[in-house]
Length: 223
View (cartoon, rainbow, N blue to C red):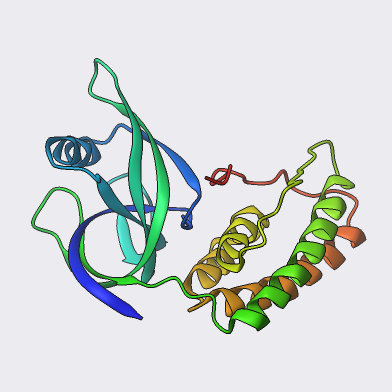
């Protein structure tokens, strides 16, 4: 569901941000220093779009050559400025958007975006899917913990389907393209259904391995 269109500063990253999840950022490039300065000079809420890089790099002369279509708005919660002009930010994901077109008139990218509604889908089916995913997710965490010294524990999982779908999406260890697919699912029911299959697959793989990479939990804890 497209709700409204607006021009949003963009921060391309090699990661996916989900609504409700925290994302700390260290700002050192000149163009993003200007982005933060422009945000601080403007009214609250101070927001920009985090969008995953499909091709290219976050920094360097080559830069970004392609972006994914679906991103997430990040709202500034805390800003720490340093004497040399760098910033440390704490942001939280607030709402997904669809990128319609890019504006390159500023040193940093901006995008014309449509904000996307957060739907659960069929409420009864989504509630059942949430219960099922809670069980499968705990089995996945147990299998993950059994493979190495890192223990990942999420004792209190939300029952609300949209919240649960994003918490699980941020916690499962999969490639960026898989994370992006979960972000792009149109509603919580479809996202939870995809996660149930993904978690079952990843749990089977973990149980067949003797070791596993440490989890990437940059987008946690849940807010």
